[in-house]
Length: 108
Length: 114
Image 1 (spheres, rainbow over the protein chains, first blue to last red):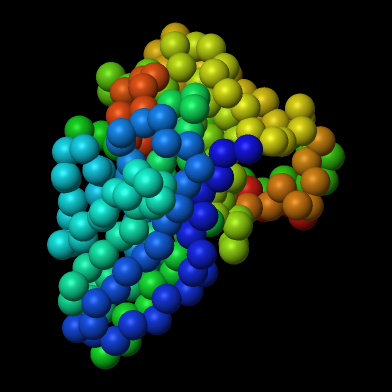
Image 2 (tube, rainbow over the protein chains, first blue to last red):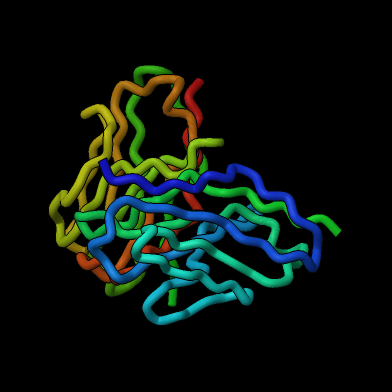
């Protein structure tokens, strides 16, 4: 079965520190990958897409095809980055498959 | 541009009843997806419709079903409701088949089973 693994359920960082969220996936047939974010009491929204390099809030993601990883990074975390983050690569059907999510808590 | 809209916001049912959840996609989007979002479990994929056809189905029992209408809106039907069905149901839409299409989400319908 195709899988998306986000190994960290919870990531706690200090404001101003770098943050990295890990994502590994098993199906590598598509060049496009996504990260989604869900802030408290808001709908799930697109954070970043790989091919177009579209991103909000200063996040970047590095695609490593050899390791089939697509880790999300930000050099200086802000309190407003506290949210739930989902890695979402496409599966062999062409639809997105979502990881279990990583809860990020940024403390002042 | 209007986003994905879901109705109702909250639905209260009792065990054994049927629930119908509705979703209107973004204008121009032909694909609609349904998910369960349970606390601690992330998004569990339920169903995917495109151009009126069921494209893919997640690992859920047959009492979870749905359809897509000619205007691309969609319904999710849950029969013989069980207590464990109490959770948030999300709908998303995209421009159609193709792995380069991001999904856009609605606010969800919270289903509560008494």
